[in-house]
Length: 143
Image 1 (spheres, rainbow, N blue to C red):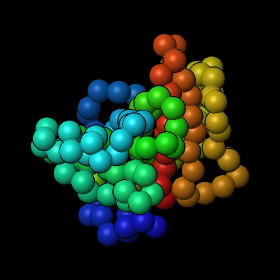
Image 2 (tube, rainbow, N blue to C red):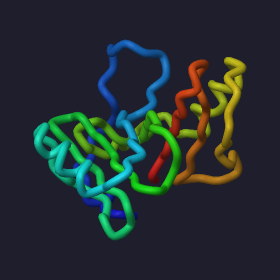
Image 3 (tube, one colour):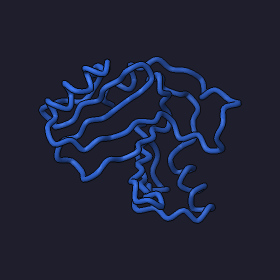
Image 4 (spheres, rainbow, N blue to C red):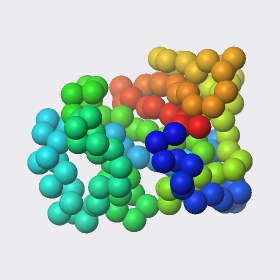
């Protein structure tokens, strides 16, 4: 489970905030040429490594509620990432919009997906899409 069971748990995301579809924690996943130099750069901006593994070519860095993932050789381009079930404070939500429900809502809105979640499954899964300007978006549910 990669340590997610150890995260503090809160009942649900706060209500009354802008937006009509709760997507969870937001981060940007950066495709980097050199993991060590990228880590050093972002540490100078106040980020701290909170996850990942350099030996597996990725690190997760946080600065307050801001999260950046550094990935070397894993994908091309940068990816906007959302994690249903997590807050930006790295709290696990007891109640959240499952990625399969997000997929259903996107289907209803005629948003084309490049990778779909298995609607017959439960738990961890993901979907991907691309915005009109070609930016990749990953909606990745960990549990």
